[in-house]
Length: 75
Image 1: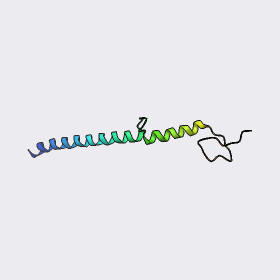
Image 2: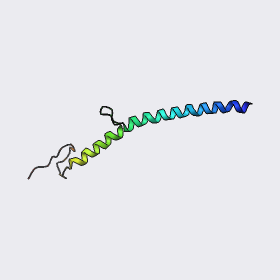
Image 3: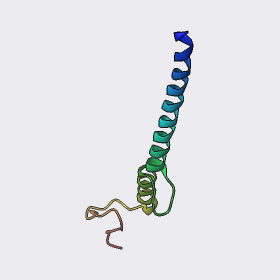
Image 4: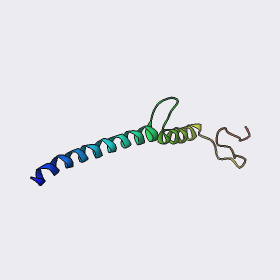
């Protein structure tokens, strides 16, 4: 009889762990790859920064110290 009563407890513990794991996964997903305008995730922010740096297509110049705008003299 003792075995039958522990089967229910194992099921309850398993379901509780699953709820906790799904909750943590949801929070991590929102904080890492959230796509909201005011609350972007860390991965999305980094990816946007990489895309902006690539799209600037800055020339190689000796005076180039800032990567947000070109700093080369126009010939």
